[in-house]
Image 1 (cartoon, protein in one colour):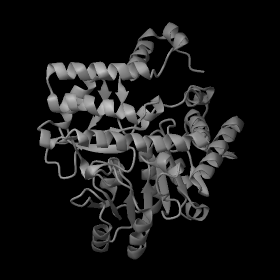
Image 2: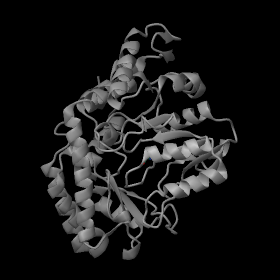
Image 3: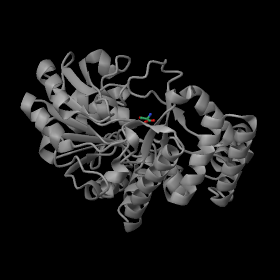
Image 4: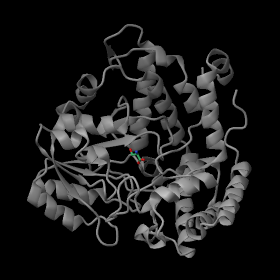
Length: 417
Ligand code: DSN
């Protein structure tokens, strides 16, 4: 099992980097919308002896001997995930969300088929057809964006779908603060004879807690990561009906199509994460994530800071800094100095470069795990105002002191042994 003190003796350089990361996580507020903090139980499974094991294949049908415990743990992960999401079929082997999406595309499409996904600029993901990604190189791509208020426009998507006749429509985003209607997406897909893939990487924790519509009854296939609002280890998963998965050979698309040996230690940690998400406390956690996001976005708007779409329905928000004349890059750097970790993010119709951007994305999944509540969101909103609106040395120092008080009030790791 993972032991910091043993690592320190064996490899002080790597131990020092880990110590640095632990101290950074302790001393900063983690507001990157795609990050979270796993439990000690998840961390223990990740640091377990399963990292030693090769287990190509699936439970009961492996290409290596000695897989009896790997089978147990993969079956536990699959059974728990099926119960959690209410689906018939699950594959827990994808190393990440991108691999899950690529495997689905590999299973359902032929090279040069048309994909319709949300554009990266509007908040979509690389694996939904970005030109630089394999999805944009091997397939033809059409994109949809958001309307002038920042919402998905389903009539517009239907229009684009009728013009471009995609074989696959992808719903899901990395920076969309509003609810997604999977039933409407399915109606559009049916109208043009396309498959629907719902990528719920960001919102899966909210979905299983009943805080967001589930795509399972509507999408042909659903993918997710396991490390965002779901609060598990870094990794991916694919869900579907038994018949669809069998007909389209989804298991084969992951192994041997795209991956070799599964990461059994990560699958063990996924099993722990699904078990945690099945507990009633997880529902409270997801409710609090949204309450915190809404309190923070209101606190920022009360201070004259523009929030794209005027709020949020989920765990994240986009702060439009363009009216303040501050770039996303400047805000990311200056907030980091004050103790807030976040990422610069393009706002739809942003004309600044992708490495500068006109905004930042803020999320509350990790803050909520740390124990912060809505009253603390007021403090964070004020600290952000001091950094991005006032922008004096004195105001930034004040913000840093305020964030320091919060990180001390909610310690993350008391001892690292
Ligand atoms: N890179 C992730 C995010 O930050 O949203 C998406 O995979």
